[in-house]
Image 1 (cartoon, rainbow over the protein chains, first blue to last red):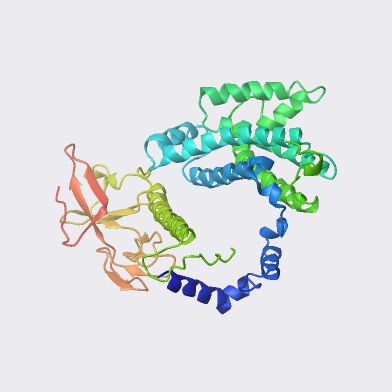
Image 2 (image 1 turned 135 degrees about the horizontal axis):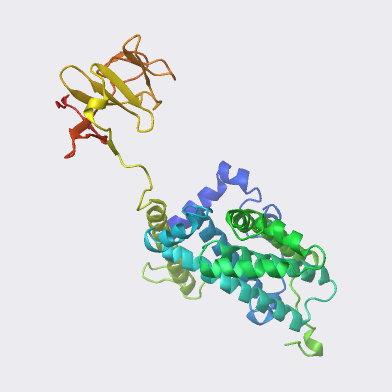
Length: 251
Length: 164
C-alpha cells in the first residue's frame, strides 16, 4: 500500500506537466533541494539553508510565523465574509447580523476573523518584544526592524478600519473618536479627518472608504511589506542566531 | 522532504510499520478528512439561506384594467397579461433562447425578441427564430379581492384561461 503510494507520487513528480512547473526534478541531493527553493517564486524569498539553532523554539518562539498564520486566516475568512457584506449604510448592520444568524457557518467565520485579528495584534507585539530583547534588531537587521514597524502600523490600521464595518453603535462611536484624534494633528488635522471620512461626519462615505482601505489597500500594503520582511531575513543572513555559545548564550 | 532512515527492525512483514510511517499516515489522513470537511463547509457557506429577491408571485391588478383583446407587458416583472374574448392568461416575457426581454408588436400582432430575432404569436407559440421552445404560460388566478395574480416560478403545461 505504502509502496504503491510512493510509486504513484514518484510517477506524478516525473511526468512532463509536473516537470514543466517544478523544474528542479526529483532527488534528495543538496543541489536538488536548493534548486527547489530557488526556483519557486514564493520560497525563493527564504534562504535555502538555515542554522539549526534558529529553528529551535527558544530562538523565536515562532512568533513571526504565528503572526503570518493569523494573517493568512484573516485573508481567507475576510474574503469569505465579503461575499455576504455590503458596505452601505442601510445594509451593513443587517448583513453582519445575517452572517451571525442566517448564513451557514457565518458566525464561525465572523468570530474566527475577529479573534484572529485580536491574536494578530497580540502576536505582532510579542514578536517585536522577542526581537527587541534578543537584540535581533541590531546591525545588519536594523532595516528589517523598520519594515516591522511599518507592518505594526498596517496591522493597527487594519484593526481600526475593520472596526467600523459592523456599523453598530460601538463601531460608529469608536471611529468618531478615532477620527477626532486624527484631527488633533497640528495645522492639517481637520483636513486629514475630512479626507479619512470623505466628509465631516462618520457616514456613508466613511463606511465605503474604510471598507476599501480594509479590504484592498491595507491588505495589499501588508502583503508587499511582509514579502520584503521575509526576503530581508535571507539578505541579512538568516534569523538572528544569538550570541556565540562560547561567550555564554543570550537567552 | 528527507528520505526516512532505514529502521533497524525493517518492516518487511505487512503488519509492522515504522513510527515515522505511522505518523505520516495519520497526518495525511487527517489532512484528507479536513479537506473533505472544508469542501462541505464551503459549499454550505456559499449557498445563501435567504434570498433578498423579488417574490415570484406578482399582483397584476384588476382585470378591467386590461382592454379586451390586448397584450400588456410589465417590463419590471417580465410577464404579459393577455386578454382574449374568452378570458385572461399570463405569458412569460423572457425569450426561451438566451433570456432577453421580448416585446409585443401591436401592428404585427406578434411578440418579438430584440436580441436574436425570435418571434412568437400571442399564445406564445414560436413562429420563427432560434428560440427552442414556446414562451411558457404561467399559473394565473384571481385573488380574494379580485386581483389577477401570477406565479412566475410556475409554468403550466395545460393552457387554461382565467375567466372573470
